[in-house]
Length: 311
Image (cartoon, rainbow, N blue to C red; front, top):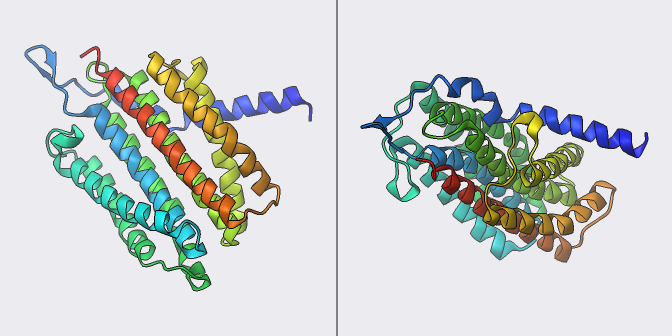
């Protein structure tokens, strides 16, 4: 296959992936939602925050498994244990905020829409057993069975989390309170956080020899999607309605992510090619993915902030 043919195939694949993203799938719902207005002004009930935080639940579900996997392997145990505990606490707080509101998170008012409440409940129902198993993980090969169980639970939980993002995006992104183009940027940028932790999880599973075949397939897909999404965020992708970065701060934030990605990507490619990682390299990879997630989280915050400038 020629290089041009490979590039064309990659481009078409990226277009197909973007069209299936949660935010894009919800576009048909957006125009049906009336704007919340008071005296002719838009009443911001935390639309962008709700989309951002619902997407964060998917990130946390992957981060918890990545951390538990590293604890089991004896890699960065202190850091992984701290991140695992923090992640479990964050999930609980975000879940409560989406249900009951939280002014500190920028979410005003309780959730009342039945479909959204059901989606929140489905995510939490899938989350609880995964969280309990992850928090019980200890260092040692005997934990491999638990890690395999966590890996198996990952896909169903991620599916429910994606459904929740689509429901919340469709509910709160409307032509007045939050433009669908802004909602899409928040959705795609937020998904990058999840993908960084999905890759972290898969690298650990591969290095540990747990669910290795499935992890390799998942890692390759996540790597391709992360790379395509980062390119679209940095340059825009008109064919699917993705705009270029609206501010210089977002340009700089995405550049930081791109710089970190250029370091991590060859490591992933080496693992997929059958290479091995020693304990030091595994710790480096774990911390690098956490760094990429943190950078993308800043970018999502900037997108959310920028979306409110017209209100």
